[in-house]
Length: 568
Image 1 (cartoon, rainbow, N blue to C red):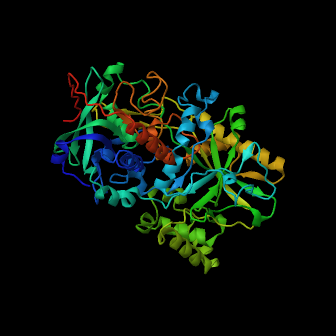
Image 2: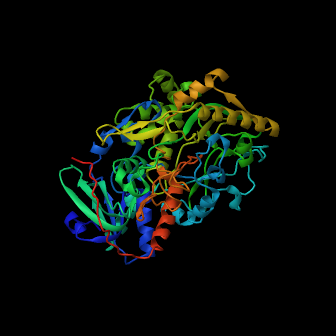
Image 3: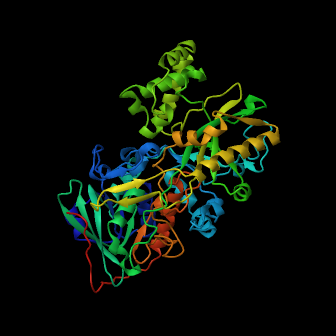
């Protein structure tokens, strides 16, 4: 239920969660199931109905925005957080993402034990995300086991059985807001920003936090026995950077705090031509008996990744570029024209999705119109059916993939990055502005090219297909850098590590040097893997709830309280 700040100040909560995105809401609901009598406070900066400018996003500066989305395209404020515009793709990380590899140069600071432990909580995460079962391999689904992506394909160095599952997409604010409002022991304080962690130098314990309202005109303090920062990677990192004395017991902030920022390199540099029967190519979605959408991905095997010292990359069949009228498809041209239409385009898709279709370009309009006219009435009926499936039913069609009678499909890559300290978040001299530095490295780009080469070699070995590159080989690195943009999948800046010297949090997500401060954000992931981080973060949130619920309630008053304030 919603609570007034004056009432919140008079209560000592068992758990205070800063941030109400998928991680914060999942953590709160799972913890309540385990400890129904405990009092939980959710502190959320956003206010329902106020989606315009805000102080937090206005005080983020992207040093080089070519490859990084602008602040308002990266996050959402308010109950539900990023899920308000999330596409719904649920993908599990792979075991290889947790394995030390030479290409990481010692910066993979988690391990396989943590992978297997987090995998135990995937079932509960799947329930919160409403994506069906926690199966992420087609061979685990009897009706699809042993099926292939194309006629003649064989699994080996390249696999085709890993799948992505799709949520409704579940808007966590809308879906779980009523449950939170109906709960007597989960209280929501909306319109307040956590700005100071008030700690004891002797124990490292955080006994209270200072918060300020949306307009930054009022301040208050709330107390809890345990605190979790689940405010998204940017705001989680900024809050810890602004409170260095929270690390006083360990001798100061970790060197890794704010560094090793990663996302994904994503785009298309080639098409795949399959030689076999086009009708046997698995280019689109499967649906389970419960109506959940699934789609397969191509990946190199663990052995191939390790032996070739590559970064993990997923690839999937896709449509040609919408922006290029050369595709000759009237429905695609109509959808492109709709996306570049002022006002209408913004209503049809979130900015990041719209950009993936338009590539930020307005080009070839006469030829697009010619495509539309030539393919009538399909140019209109196909988008109409897609619009209904994507916007007018409860479980929405996740995407649009069109059959190719020529058996040629664009190949979309989605690749992890090397963790490097130069990619980072840091405070400006004013102590408030968050500067973000983000670029792609030569290793990121080279791994993508070599992955495509290995895929091409494998398809030819199987005798089932080949790649057709869109650019000359010497132009591929520049093309990849020009087309890729992220900033939505934010990992690495508060990473997990086995020691306080190597990371910010331990395997239980507890901040090193503190007994009761935790981080539940994708920023704790030391590597970005091939998967978007949302689903694994959900599993981590469930896992953290179980860890916190197992902690005995100890009421201890620190001898001396140090208050560290960074606001004016």
